[in-house]
Image (cartoon, rainbow, N blue to C red; front, side, top):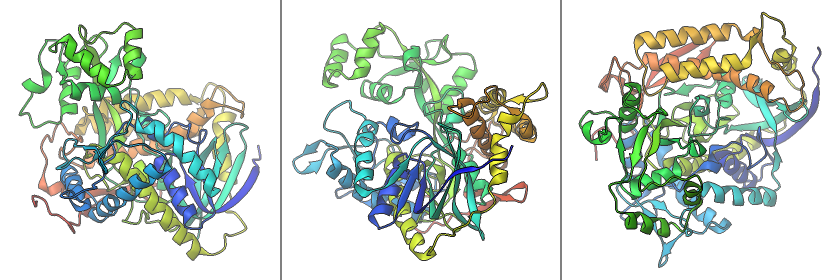
Length: 571
């Protein structure tokens, strides 16, 4: 069936993705004088962006003896020296401006005198994380309150319920996107002088995850098809302890993290052994230790470990609860009959954040003209591991840098071409799952479940061996080869969530292939990339792994790290 465009829009700067990085990019580009459009596959500021789930982590160096340079050193050391050091310095210098702007917008931070009250997180040499004045309130809730107001003030065109499908290119440069209106099933083209990709990460692909299941790597897939380079896709962050039981809180991590650290919670396996203590000295990161225990069968009935506070007196726990201002999670625990004074919560590691992604420079530019990237879709800022509290401040800072740079690019480009590349093949490819039917078709939901099984068994904290990764890669390639047979049961174009998942799965396959190839190539263990057959780090691998498209093939190579600011082992 012939496909037609319902709309053909234009702007100076197009931002794809409306989390913290995207909305910050839109605001900064608009403040620089650009005509900006931002699109989201859900309602603006009510979509599945990880930003709205954020806790209170926000690293920024404000007062001596701390400094942006010291913040950068901490980031690079925790990142095990795989970071893009120029990018890290650009971000640590930008975070102060981001914080002060949030305060002007109406976020109320606790102060002692005229200074922000800040706390120190693991890996940081100084207290660097400001706390909101109201205890127990998450930053994500506040971000969602203030950001839409700024968009309206600046006249940014915000388009919700538009799912980006493929980037448009002309003469090698990105010039817009083809998107699907998920409400009525119509196709929309948006032309732009510069495009900022801020679609988030891909850790929502996993079956059990701490992040939004909408984060399935569409931006990664689109950027790869457009020719963008990726780096260090094998690295990702898994949070040590997310709730698996009681099910009411499954996947939650923020409040349980505060609870675990503030009250010195102890994590036991099913034998009653303090896991962190008896595995001390193993050289493994805590999430890997926990996952090994679970996969060895020393787990709770619901596949987790036991987080206990029974070693504490009741009145101490009561005092802590009262100091939290009776936060909502306390009421929820009481309502479902969970008393942490007597019983344990069940937790396990869960996917949290993509660390590798689009390769960008210190101005958030990719190797593809006209295409910038910001936020979790990028690689290089965090190296091999995340400094606690960095992600949200770095996403915001990178969004600000990308927005300003996109406005510069837009001024350099001049006029937007009136005509479009041929978008019919893109639209026909997108509707194929709707048109396919019959017994030879492959249900998209079956494909998604198979990918999740591969992710859990071979591309999780455990399971990375030569044999296992070879199996994973062959299964992924087999799934990719059957893409033309994928079909959905619901054939309507309006509000068809199954069709939206089909469009997501196309990019999931690309991301899974990148993950498998990168994990196969890096024959060492570093950060949370744990190769069971290469369990130690190697100086031979003090480099970045680069992935890019080469015709129909996925090319992988190494790139040296530039130690322009701090060298390995240097204070």
